[in-house]
Length: 300
Ligand SMILES: NC(=O)c1ccc[n+]([C@@H]2O[C@H](COP(=O)([O-])OP(=O)(O)OC[C@H]3O[C@@H](n4cnc5c(N)ncnc54)[C@H](OP(=O)(O)O)[C@@H]3O)[C@@H](O)[C@H]2O)c1
Image (tube, rainbow, N blue to C red; front, side):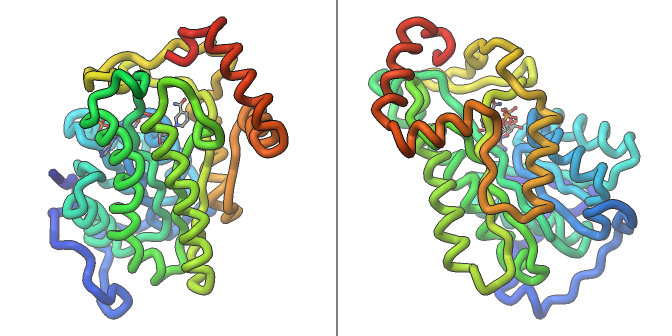
């Protein structure tokens, strides 16, 4: 499903994008690190994606916003446009390849190019594997895996044309297992591995391929994740002092892109997980099993 604001939905990218001239009907911002560049952030109608779009705009990018809810996406587009930023939007489910083609076509039709892709859209869960309906597992996994693969497949010819940048948004929960997060953790680990493989495959193209492992972050009040039966439920409560703000996380994502880093792991907890998982994996399991007994609500 897709619906575009500021640009008509068109067919997907041509086989050889480099041979197809595009003219931008909209003038791109002229100042800032990303001046003259166009970014596409999936799942940017809310949360971290919205703040990442804002941070990119603040540094001079024109940004294509995306989500599945037309009203909420339009509110975000309007708010950023009112702030003076150059934005377009496209309603698209990123687990649908045709919709991803239309999403990328929005960037090309509206701005004439695509330099930066951030695959941020994701569905999370609050459910133990044993209780999960198979269809719910698939939905969470698909949103994280195909929601990363399909936008990149559609955008790749254009990104290669400009030696651009793609960043997959993963989680510190991809670095270790996390009870009640089976499909989510599996999907986030899959995209981290995918980034590594693509970096090797595309090493001589000049494309930046990176992954950001995000830790606990403040959420929009209306954020919902899936229960074992697929009902949207609020996310588990975590103490605010353990959480970074969305703006802090967005600023680290943008810094990661500017420096064309391979991997960024956010938060002290994330760094600790990397160390423990690498050198003392049994200790890591012991800590999780201890905390799940004492702080069950923290995982659920
Ligand atoms: N918040 C945290 O503590 C945390 C921690 C680690 C990693 N992360 C990662 O950071 C990213 C952003 O998380 P967030 O907390 O900002 O979550 P969020 O508020 O739920 O934002 C996710 C966005 O993705 C969109 N989306 C979901 N499925 C989609 C689909 N199939 N097609 C298009 N859009 C879709 C959602 O909009 P619709 O549902 O309306 O389409 C929403 O705008 C995610 O990748 C998440 O896994 C977050």
